[in-house]
Length: 256
Image 1 (cartoon, helix red, strand yellow):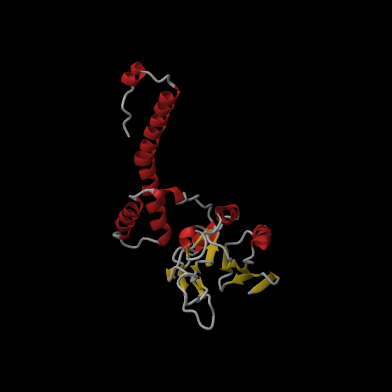
Image 2 (cartoon, rainbow, N blue to C red):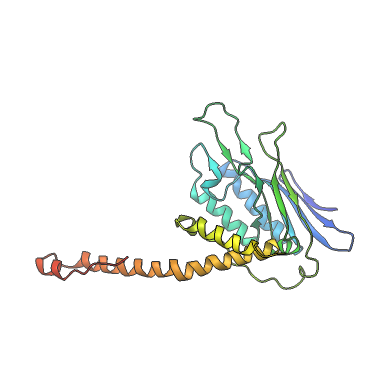
């Protein structure tokens, strides 16, 4: 391991393996105060340009991606979460998920009215690192003498023959799908269909599930969106029409 840079907020290093391969690891801490958060986003942008190696970044980022990653206390400002999502996308960093408790920090208050827990610690990696370690597993470990859970990253077996090849850009999960009642069912069906096959890597499972979700988006949600637009146009026409018995009789029902 060779340390490239460090500060009170990060340590950046290159991990060299036995056969000459190398990848990059950054441990990072982000300030919790809103006025200081911009510093960590700038730091991530700076670190991104230091190397093109496969990159794993892990630590206490003191931010959540969506309000479903928080329970208790006031909801997080959407602008703050949006900035976090934008920075990750701009740096080609993708959340690696987790095994275990969904929340990595809690305030340990004994009063339920003030008890708060959040997922502010996580592991993210760029496309090259994910392609090299498709079987990665991130474990939210048991907290000991801390209000944070340790983030344990198990890289798993490598895909050595493929990680240097040009990477196919994988479509991403759309947050708007979570607003649809059928979303969870669609994900479970797609996941079970792929997992029923033998010897399927995690990257392939994710790719196939996303493929089915995007097909659902085009064939079902897309058609619904067209009907909604048509209904809105008809509604706007009715709003602008002069109100009379004649126009009332001419109104046609809108199919949704």
